[in-house]
Amino acid sequence: MVFENAYCASPVCGPARASLFTGMYPPSHGVVRNHVCMSAKRPLLTDRLSEAGYYNALIGKLHLSPCRSRHGFDFKALCDSPHAVYDPEEVVNNPYRQWIDKELFGGNTEQAERIIADSEKKPSSDPAFWLGTDWCDDAHHLTTWTGDQAVDLISKWSQEKPLFLNISFFGPHHPYSTCPPWDSMYDPQTIELPKTLRMSCGGPIFERIGKGRSRRSWPDAVWRQIIAYYLGAISQIDRQIGRIADALKKADMWDNSIVVFTADHGDELGDFGFIGKDLMNEGSSRVPLFIKLTGSEKRGNRRREIVNSIDLFATLLEFARGSNWKMPADERIESRSLVGLANGAADDWDNQTFVTHGVSPQKSMQLLRKDRFKLVRMNLPDSEPLYELYDMGDDLPDVRNVFNEPSCRAVRDSMLETLNSWWDRQTGYFPDRAVLQRLTVRPFAF
Image 1 (cartoon, helix red, strand yellow):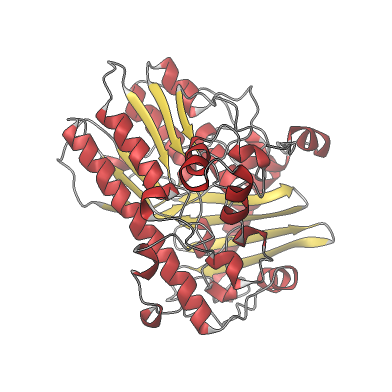
Image 2 (tube, rainbow, N blue to C red):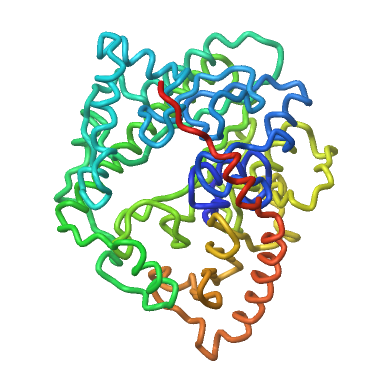
């Protein structure tokens, strides 16, 4: 089952993942940027599943701080990152790094870090920061390791408890280069560049972002190589997903398993000359979402309702605990179960969702997608909020700002009321700066 209009709760790794595990938007759970510690007082998806008798296992990237916390998992084969550039803790108690350091570098941790993190230490204006290098072969790549760990756990699974298995691949993520044969699978010469690569939106938010964040003026050949590597990384992951599906079938678990595939956020990959994440453009805020139900009676269904990865919190709990289970009464939980949509119902679905990103109410961005339109708001400490409105029925999204068009006035005013009301409520949930500073992970030597 494919959800064609799925968005992330926030176009940044840590906040988006924390939203999936809490059913709350970043202001409510407090992880408003990467490497902010989760509050121990917030029950997580894993805690709720444990109450229902599930065994919770994690393989790969979790990106919830602090890394050393269990976060409700009974088993963790954790590799948030193969290097320690952004948080030294990410290579502590990291089984992938321990294995690689020994296998490829003879136990020389310093040499391993220097080689693995080489491109990440370059300025982001340098294409080499994004391209990276293929420093290992496929057998030693993090994507393959993640697949190997998952296949091994599934093949050896013998407990009577039901299993919640969170498998998270690091890629596709910069540096985009992986290793042979994936790096050469797609010929850069055949890559079609984004139609918006050299375009400008012209809206006030786009103009403001353009002043504070560099649009890349790289040659077309650089963009084609970046996208070719990105596609190769996806194909490498796709191979591992196939292996995991085969392992579930061999273990006689496939028909009785619900499988969900999604991403924490997207990547601009050249849209409007941007690269990376944290924007409200479709490339950054829209994500894939597939759900395989138990059995084989439903195949190939596509849903066009507007949903959010935050909705997986309620969805997985209803799948695991049954339709009679009720969500705890907490106004901050905004997750909506997709079970009804998965079973074909749609009559009562509220066809809208929100996205937010920012460390404070005064420095943040929000998105409301409702039916055919998308409203974006940008909050600034030195001016009134800026707004843009887009008709998603256009051939190219995020291009034609219709905020001031008379024909869109009614839908604009209605969406303004909805977004502003929702955001006013969210601003009351933000952790204050002192708390945020205290919760931030402190770097330490490894």
